[in-house]
Length: 226
Image (tube, rainbow, N blue to C red; front, side, top):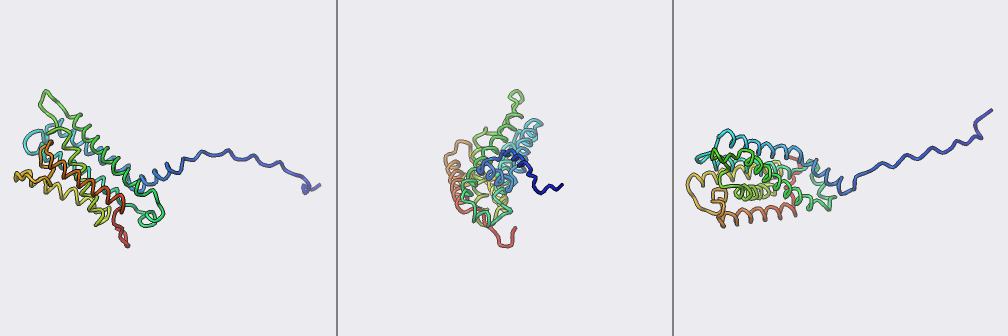
């Protein structure tokens, strides 16, 4: 007896597997490709250092009460702009029509996260009975973080994403010098009082120009990589 003439019943079809929407997958790949989880960890570290510094009175008085938060704000901006680098390089730019929107959304989200974690760190270390609080409040944090991020985005256009961190850290050194020397130039916004209109205007203009240029063009790409 042979099985030539026997017909086997068709195998049942495999149940359909759930797949995330294409937009969600694209967003996740963009976030992973730019090491955003590591960037968020770095931003949390900035907030933790600020909270610990206020709690243990490392820089609660004197010039350090302004200088150290300024350094942490520049560090947060440096973390943000380094995410401009993509290991995929030109192929991603050539094939991704949503790439400008992803750039814009990612920078805005990370800026919001940076301001939020620094504010949370300041709130954690706040002690009104001991007179410990963040110098000048949260307004300079938002202004300085946005301004330093704008500087970093402009550097990314010229030097690439992996070198963009130089911009915020170098410019905060300029602002530190202006603070010590008593300069009143609006361009050194981080050394200005929290309600200074010129400081706010300078920081927001630099951030807006850097964000628009970065959204449209993206970071510089080197043929040999970075």
